Image 1: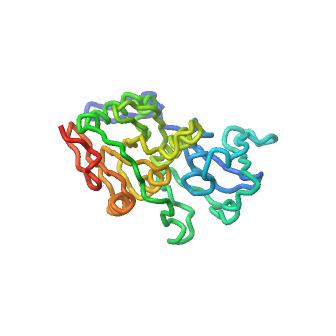
Image 2: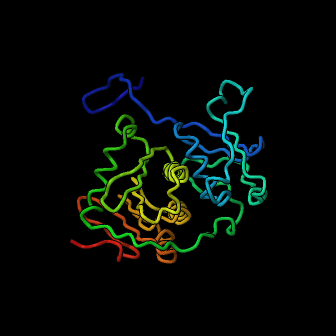
Image 3: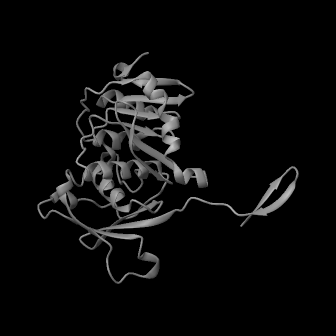
Length: 262
């Protein structure tokens, strides 16, 4: 229940709000990081997070993923224990042992070197028409069931050359929504995602571009503005970056050759 105030008076009403809860990821039983997220698609989130952090490089690197036993009641739905391949030595230096907030995709990194993008440039022959790109915001909004109820969630979707949305994920954190998508693509054997574009509901900043580059995504579109670092990353790593995608207009900040004018 809440109290709504307006020029005409006040009233007590009920409202739906976005859920935000912590997800603790453990690797081999060892607590590794806590992600503030919207519950749902937790296994995809874990897969995508490990992949975009460079801790796993293929679906087979993640051997097991389970809910541990003997948890406290408040932990039952908020802990995942991950088992990685024994030969995977990349996991050892991972020391991000505190939480990543829903507003920050790089929180917990301890140095500038830790946020360096180590992925290769994106190579793709994907071309998408301007008309298809212009229709993406409405298509993404149509897939945002939770946003329609709460008005408080970000969304991300993978689309193909025809503009068909193959998967849509929502979360209080825009970077979590992208990790959930990448986790889906990893499980489906669709990485690197050279034939897919990424549409996000908010702005594009470093962490969104970093995750897109890690997944091999050639086109990133957003309804709002990109940051200066996002533009620099897009230029350097061969990503087509579209911002302010609204009402049929758009700004293309990097690698416009993938957008076919009409």
